Length: 44
Ligand SMILES: [Zn+2]
Image (cartoon, rainbow, N blue to C red; front, top):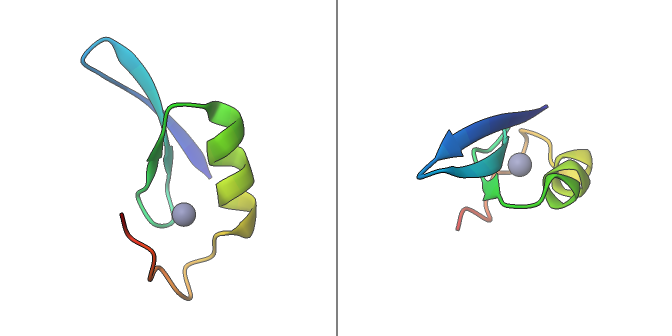
């Protein structure tokens, strides 16, 4: 699921599965929909 977090007065949305951070909730949601924990190979 997507976790909302604040850093440096900016709200970020984190994919709880792989830990990627997004500045747009819709981006995080789209990512999370495709993301599963079987292959976190695209770490930034
Ligand atoms: Zn992810």
